[in-house]
Amino acid sequence: MSSDNTGKLAGKMFICMIGLMLIFIGGVFEWLMLRSYLHAKESRQWPQVEAVILSSDMDQRRISGSPPEARLNLLFEYDYKGNKYTSGRLSPRGAKWSREKDSVADLMVDYPVGSFHPVWVNPYSPDTAILKHDTKAAGYTIWFPAVIMIGGCGMIWGALRDKGS
View 1 (cartoon, rainbow, N blue to C red):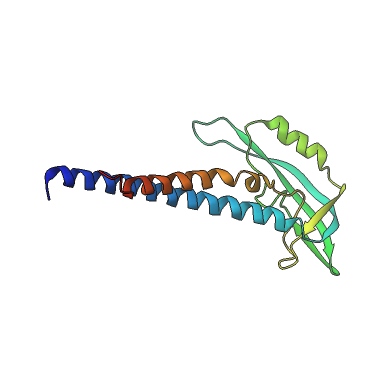
View 2 (cartoon, rainbow, N blue to C red):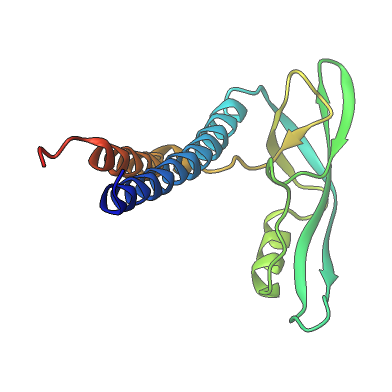
């Protein structure tokens, strides 16, 4: 095998490896986005019950070198199938930390102590309930990692096809 053919083979292998990495990375993101979409869709099927807010506070933290952050700390009680449960989940992912205390204060205004709100209860784990659903946006953008995967396939096809040389 001549050094020219060895160089061509090495170049083809390199392009194929890049293509495989794009397929793998695109596949991982495709799976993560699909999983996020399916979880958001599933929680919309959970039964809805009424809950009362027991506490509504603002947690604060400061990590060295960073500005202070805050998040909403809720506790609500609900009745599901004759049993009383408590939960503190605003959404399936919980309350997120924010540098903007005003946005957390606005959430506290939306959920004052003693107010009633609809919650969705996980029928397979009734101690899990949420006040808000996650967005289904991941399902609408699932095409993007697919484009990356198609690009990886195109790189492999381009490297391996016979160009009639």
